[in-house]
Image (cartoon, rainbow, N blue to C red; front, side):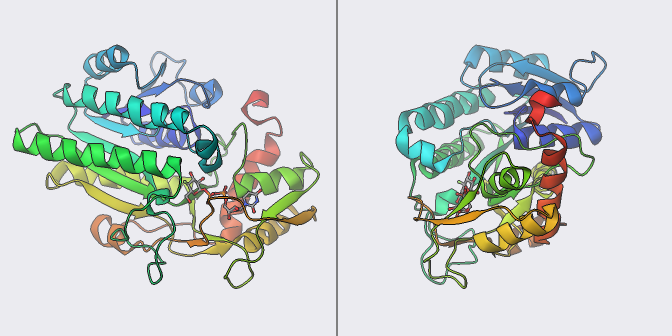
Length: 347
Ligand code: UFG
C-alpha cells in the first residue's frame, strides 16, 4: 500500500507509521506538529532518503498540499488520525475543534475524492460519538445510538456522516472509494520495542497522569468522581493497547480491498471495563510507587461506564485484542515514560 497517515507524528499516528513501514508499505506522514513531535519521525527513519517513511509538515486542511502529496506518492490508502482529542478542551473552545476536526477533515475527504488512486479511507472515530449509552447498551455495540455529549464527540460524528454520504455518492457515480470508521475506546500503552511513546502537552489522560504521579512529576493525582453507580464508585473505561488498535487498522485496510461499498464501522476496544481505582492500583503495582491519590468532584462530560462490545470486529476482521491485562497495558506505558522523563524532548 501507499499510505497517507495524517497526524503521523502524533501518539497513535506514529504507531501506525511504525507498523506500516515494518510491513513493507510506503508511508507519507503528514503532521502540523501542533501536538505531534518530530522525534518519532526521526526515530522511525524519516530522515533517511532510502526509508519507506516520508515526513511532511503541514495541515490536512491545506487542500493544495494534500492533493500534491496524494498525486506525487500515488497514495491508495488514507488513514486519518489528525485531530484534536480532549473532551474538556472541546467544551471550552468548540470552534477550534470544529475547524480542526470537521473543516480540515472535509477538505481532506474532498481532496481524496478528487484523487482517483485513493480507494480506501480509514477514519479515527471515537466511542465519544455514543455519548452516555442508554441502559442495556454497555458493553456498547456499534448499533448503539450515536448521541455525543461533547463538541469533540460531535466533530467525530460529523466526519462519520461526511464519509457515509461521500461513500454513497461515490458508489453511485462508480468512483471506487471505500470507507471504514474505527470507533476507539481508551487507547493506552506504547510499542513493545520501546521506540515510541505517549507524550502529550497538556496531559490529561488517566494512565499517563498517574504515571507522572508515580514518577514524581506531579505531587498527587485526583480521581474525578467517587460517587458513580459503579462497583467502586469510579468511572469505568475500556483500555485498548495502541499496537492492537493499529492492528485493527491494518486488518480493516485489507478488508476494504474486497469490501462492499457500504461504509464499515467497528468498535475497537478489549470488551472489558476497568475502573479508575483499578487503573491507579495497577500503576502503583507496576511502578512500585505509592503516590498520593485525592478524591475530587466529577469532571463535566464524563460518561459513567464505557466499554466495547467487540463482537463485530472479531467476527468480520478476526481482530482480537492481544493485550487485555491491565498491568500489561500499564507496564508498556510505564516502560517508555519512566525511561523518557522529559518525553520526546529528552529522547
Ligand atoms: N480521570 C481521573 N483523573 C485524572 C484523569 C482522568 O479520575 O487525572 C478519570 C476520568 O474522569 C475518566 C477516566 O479517568 O473517568 C478516563 O479519563 P481519560 O481522560 O483518560 O479518558 P476519557 O475516557 O475521558 O477520554 C477518552 C479519550 C477521548 C475519547 C473519550 C471517549 O481520550 O479521546 O475517551 O469517552 F473521546
